Image 1 (spheres, rainbow, N blue to C red):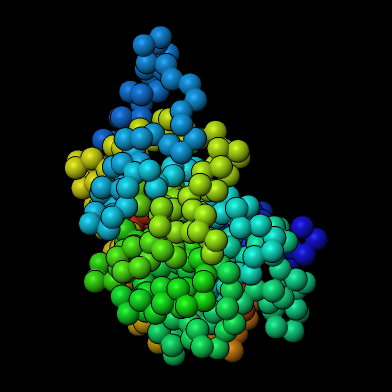
Image 2 (tube, rainbow, N blue to C red):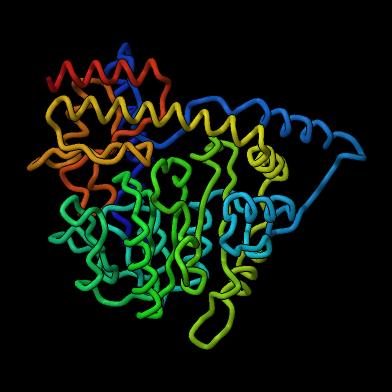
Length: 397
């Protein structure tokens, strides 16, 4: 715990936002920072949750503890709907209270002696949980890295995909696609290379597909679209960005039966034990909401909401592009990744907040490879996105 530097990125941004609002009490602050969804959850979903919740007040409808692994219907529906034709069974799907909690449980499973690699930049939860678990060394101020972690540099010049020939083997490879924060979705050829590297090195991939529902081209939505991936990969995902469940809390992890340790013991059995030991199961109300999301009516309604965020992202990308900024992402992702060459990310964050009253996220919070960038999110109401665009054009134009 003593190795952790400062607070977790997003609470730190929250503190700065509060301080700014105290300084400028009349300012209309627009948050394009923390990936907190803003569009209402479709009524077909909330109605199902409300009816279930009301039934809990009756003897006939009351339910207590459920299976730690999750509602069997939801597990099977996720396998059928999200992994159609990929050979995933409901018994390999574990329902959780969100992908970030699954990261923590997987780190608990791996233990302190495992070596890890992360994309650079990437979601900070992978690194911070690795630090807490004791998988890392001390922080190197000169390199802005933790010793004991392999940082897989992902830059525009390498199409945001790491050069695995330049990094040593690790036991675990954390990989997020579409990537948070760069917004880039890995291609089929890139994921084939990732799976090949894992097989060659005897590594386990933890594949985070939390933003896969935003993919609108032929990029894979799951690692299991790649032949052989079930032998080397665990996939985690979430209803948070897919269905607006950031406050409802629901996610899942897929641990294929084919995935084994070098001695042949199934990883699934160990993860099942971790789940049953540390978790009493996701909220039954949330799981009913998850089932409603995956119904034909619910799925269509959710796609419409995702379309709103996609259009928001396009507005943001077009805004920065018109200002002559290098901007990436925003196509298969709700995030735009904007480059400010030669600048410190926190300085850019502070300048934008001070001059436009807009919250962004400093890129350095996602790893040393994020220095000089800021992440601008598309999660806000359309009128706020348009106003943010106007402010950006006025200040940077």
